[in-house]
Image (spheres, rainbow, N blue to C red):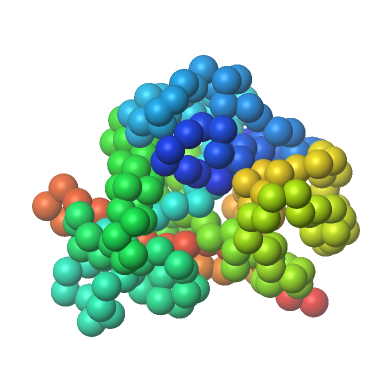
Length: 239
């Protein structure tokens, strides 16, 4: 069926990334350190995309989960300052028209994430997720996620913000119970955010539409720029 790679992104240092790998026939996610991918600071979209693609091909990964925006706000959108998916999920960072973000401190991260999606799509053949994804077997999907929303969709209290020395063990145990995953012990905050969206990969592999929820609009391609896009999150299957 393939495998999933989940990356909680950062734009300053690779040490701030959280990266987990999960084979489709496994219930045991594996931590991946940036140096395993040959990554060296500072993060740069083109080299990161190349490293991800090389690792993905070797490990049979066909679902890539990225915690960061894939596109800019469509200029004609009636929603001001942000994409529809960000309005629906109330994300802290708002992606504006090209070159704009709210708050402005998010712009470097947002630009880096959008550039990464673009490099993956145009340079290595990854597809941005669309609402008709089950009709396209065989594609390699680059999927935008928002882990903060995934916790509640899985019936777990939202992971708190980063607090030095805080224990995340209760969230790790709750996530392990809910997903059935044998999660590594002592996952840090970034790795926990990468872990909570991992069920998306298996939902996509098995075309289980009841196990994911999409927010926003299909990506719009216009004049060489990508706008809007869908944010995917896992959810408990309907009983």
